[in-house]
Image 1 (cartoon, protein in one colour):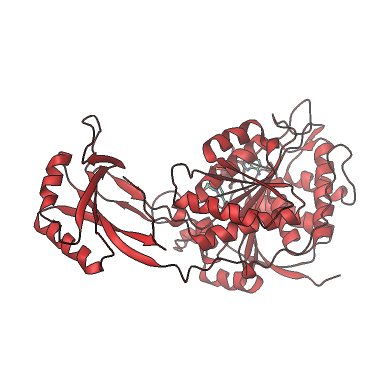
Image 2: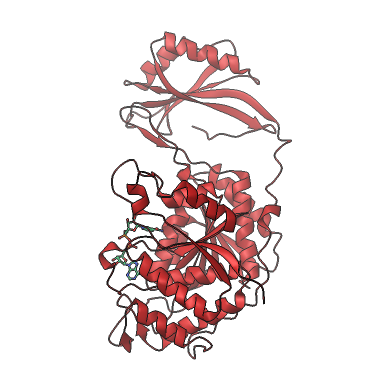
Length: 477
Ligand code: NAD
């Protein structure tokens, strides 16, 4: 038997302390080999003036143990507070958010009795970079950033996780019919990496119809990998249609650190009443034990939990007259699981974790872009202005230089000059595209911008137009 593994535990806010106490008692009784360090996070820490909800000293524990078992916290209302989860994910490089969502019919009500899906969500990029600007009186912008290393890491992780858990299929959701460059990159990386796993089926769905299919027939999916925003939304949908958001756990995984939690929040209205369901956090704990190589204990707990559910011992959130035998509180539910350690369910599928060690994420191939040839061929000047497209084009006529000519003007992505339709609504946010015959130096852009300013126009930002290995890499008008 291996020695105890150090982990950091936070008891959180609201129902957090009750469900964490319940889970730790189950883990301990099951024989989990853990050496626990406790830190404080959440509301009290925010109120002491730490705007991220975590004290500097707590990071020392996380750096030491590298494994965080976290109860939900209450995020204070109002400005000035930063999300603790986002801070932890970004600081510790937790790029993968993994949420298994299974149904437990007929013991827990669900419209989807055969559902067993793992959602793998990219955790660091996409619109969650948090780069937003109000650019004009009318228009606000949020930047969507998708990187090749980020896409490679998450897609590789999804296939490795599928392989480790004996899953048969990995599906990718993107919206690359519209976002051809950003989501297009994610899809391309998915196709490339999928080819390395011939034993695992792969498929791609456009996220809108994929989401509809997931909500209607989740049993058609096995593992689904997605960029951050789609994953954020659809992992909640998946958990809810499986039966309850109170049941699902999640892991947040990086090359050096990992965090495990329930997907739900601190449910403050239920706090301190011994009511809350500890199952979501317990599932987070099971994922943690698998991560720590304690699959034997994870399996023991998971099967005891299934048996408890099957015996109809339910907390208020999943209790029903016809399906349950006993309505219990948090502590009694934990005790019922402990009493069933060593037992297996008879109707629900017994869990068998014959799984290998997790893949070494630090060795993931993140692609080599060092030899890509990048040429500057023009730029888009974004201008804050009110008037007609033809008037703007006339004003811009004089700002062109020998090397950079005005090619097109668009408004919210629709070309309004040359050509254009009188019906198109135009905001005060104009993209004016200047292109050269050949590659251009940056100083040519500066000259045009200087001319734009001299013409009394308010440029609000620029985007360079580049060719990569000779291919244009920007959206058309
Ligand atoms: P919530 O998940 O706390 O509660 C939503 C609903 O689900 C409530 O009706 C609640 O009673 C019920 N519920 C949730 N967990 C339950 C459980 N284990 N057992 C029984 N019922 C349960 O979401 P909310 O009310 O939107 O948020 C409350 C607080 O939690 C907010 O401050 C929010 O910011 C925070 N939050 C924290 C995390 C986190 O720490 N990871 C995640 C989500 C929300």
